[in-house]
Amino acid sequence: MAEPVRTCLGCGKKKFKKNLLRFVLEGNEVVLDHEAIALGRGAYCCLDKNCLRFFLRNKKKASQALRVEIAGFRVELASIFRSKE
Image 1 (cartoon, helix red, strand yellow):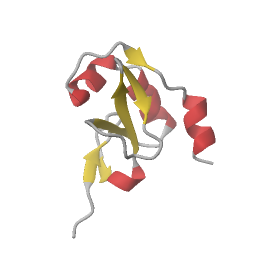
Image 2 (cartoon, rainbow, N blue to C red; image 1 turned 180 degrees about the vertical axis):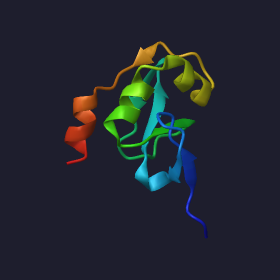
Image 3 (cartoon, one colour; image 1 turned 60 degrees about the vertical axis):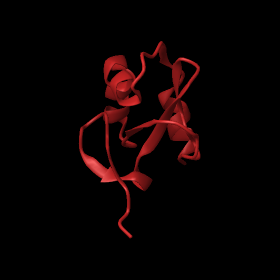
Image 4 (cartoon, one colour; image 1 turned 30 degrees about the horizontal axis):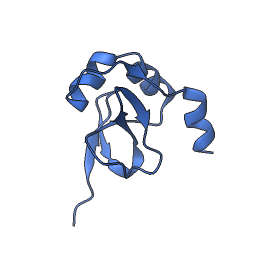
């Protein structure tokens, strides 16, 4: 069976799902899905600081991917990199 491929919302490159971070909607804010198991639509981004910065500054792109208007992000870059070490 083929491994799932998703598009990074930071750089636009297609990558294997297991190599990307998954973000989901919680209330009306985007949060990191640490375990990648939360229900609902997800948005994906590389574990690259430049991609993450672009993604976290672009509410419109995240809104389009999640198919809902978002209020903002409840994510900090520092916490993402601490959790991946």
